[in-house]
Length: 350
Image (cartoon, rainbow, N blue to C red; front, side, top):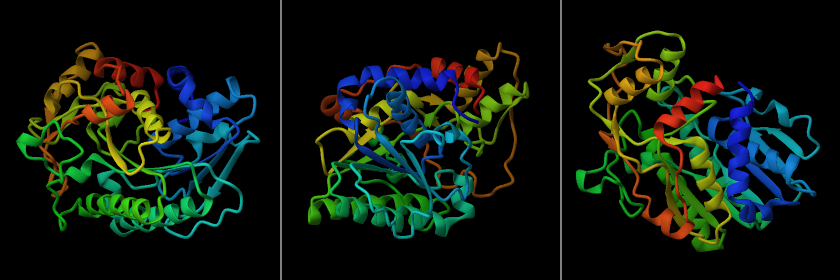
């Protein structure tokens, strides 16, 4: 994995779409935790594009990551740049950084069900202690904006009348199930954000991403990366369920545009759904769509997963209500599911 023309095209589109908003980053300092990961590396790539093509006074980039479950490969192009600093550290430990910081995005987390079930305590630490540490850093540095990347998983398995799911929905989450280490610690992270906002006026914003996909996805047993990789290998698409559950999927460049709209807004103390509210698609129909994109040559087969907890507490539906982001941020996803899948395949970074 690394950067390529597809990712650069995405970064350029975001930079041009948000030219006015992103101009405030010029000459500032931008810290991102978990910057080697799928989502946060895209945030760094947008600033990289701006520094290389737009800004006369570059935005200083700081990436904090302990590399416990990732490598620097995705962001290796940044290490030769004088405006880039890499801090190899676990975010759950206090962060000591002497210089000024203007913007913080806290995205360090174990977001894969495979990883967070294997490392539940580390997952809780990153989402709770890590969030607390970054909020204290934001308070110390008097940052202009702080974004916490939460998760749509804080909603759990929403009731039928709460799909599409608005930010006002309190959630239907098990506190003791196999996913609880992730779901509940993300919820605690949100509570910490609001505590720092209410007590110390830290300019926090909360993002709840919904099923983001694109170049650079990890091979971690989530359906989109699994199905596309089956296709790239010309293998049958394997399903470990009947495929009845539904999701909406958001291509990464649309999501990152939404992330920057939140970060650079004045809506402190607010939570925003970021995703795509295009018609939900069942997993069986997603498998068929990907097969069609690969020329209709791939069989779709069902198998039994040996992991007993693979589907336990899995939401039946996942679809965001984007009314708040549309009305307050003018957020409009543009990339269709089919186009996003085609771009992901073309990138080869899956």
